[in-house]
Image 1: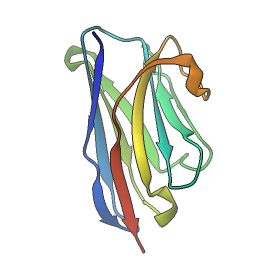
Image 2 (image 1 turned 120 degrees about the vertical axis):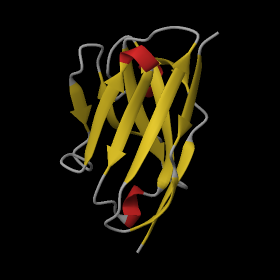
Image 3 (image 1 turned 30 degrees about the vertical axis):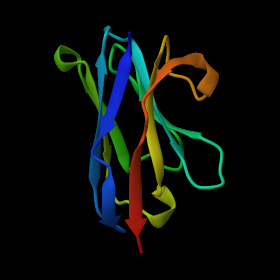
Image 4 (image 1 turned 90 degrees about the vertical axis):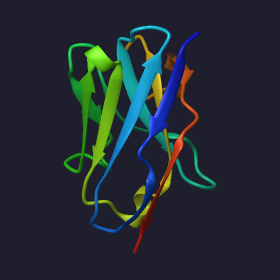
Length: 119
């Protein structure tokens, strides 16, 4: 059984940084995506990383967020810098066959971790 567990969320002031981690257990994975969902809004794509290490980002976070992976630890990291209040959301990791902005293309999801950015 595949399980994904996110960690690293919390409360940070605007301009600050956080690093989220997502550990996958039960299998190795190819691509991982990060999504977020703010209250009252749809879950949206934030970024993703392929097996080869290619990364992709939504325009809203490009230049501020980076993604890396440690295949030996089956872990992906989402480094978030220059955080803004509008980045406040629950962040989810998900694994799929390829990086996609479409939620349905991911097979497994974590439970999410809350990120709150105060102004």
